[in-house]
Image 1 (tube, rainbow, N blue to C red):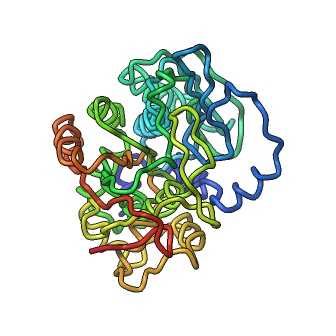
Image 2 (tube, helix red, strand yellow):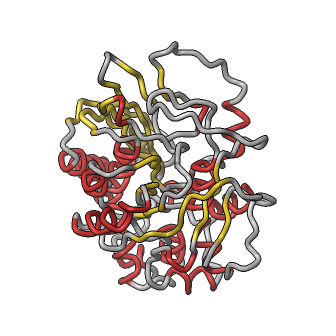
Image 3 (cartoon, helix red, strand yellow):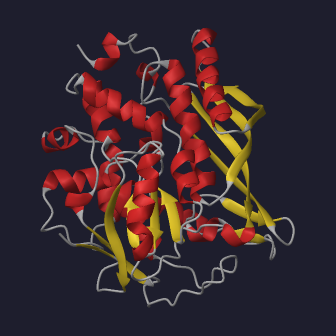
Length: 368
């Protein structure tokens, strides 16, 4: 009997082909679509869609900027309240990744017309719990009928413009800290077919429900040069985005030099140091994988050399994370103090997983 059969049946999951951030369109396809769109917004649009960052940033005065983000997806768990919590935590995360604090959220709902509305009520209640925990207000939303249930949020946040964090401005010499363990996608894929332990599923769900608010607040006074949250594109594609800088970063004053392929630095990862959910490597070795993980692998073909990395670790670094942790680049002298502060704030699985190095042959490399 699978985890979902033991926990309320498959009323949510039976309508869904995929769930969580594993439902995302692959990054290469998105990039090809976005590059054809007209850009605009004027000088006050500090962060738009051109840089593959986590949210949009719009300057409103000499000191402050608004942060705008939206995220929604089908369920990856069958308990509706748990689904609501996870989806809300995931949507709120982008604001903290950009260095701001959320203050307003709007619900986004797609729900099957013939499904019990009590399920939707539970989803919305779970989301509201996390919005409240984030210190934000729920201001309404929009709902439609559809074949698959989907839920998420549009979130507005605020930040000091000088303290906006980009995903693509890391400095050579910085250390990389990941605040949550990898493997949630693999664990939930194993759970669907009854192969995951209750302990592994519990850890995955607990991690997905946890807000990145606490890791962000612990990092406020540290010298963070770049930050992103690791979600549907997995650790490796998000690391690639971190290595691929824009020509300018006006809101931070940093102007990263680019190479011909657009990468200004390389990200050196130590796979053995990365935190993983226990048993996730066993499930990956048994080929209990996700379609999104394979899309992430295809995205990195010809970009990284995986020959020295065991297959299970490869898969966990490609694994799509739903409501994953923050990946922060911090000055080397502050890495250990920041790690200690993040753990003290409650993210006990956080770890230093690599460093930023001057541009190497490949944008993402591995070091033991």
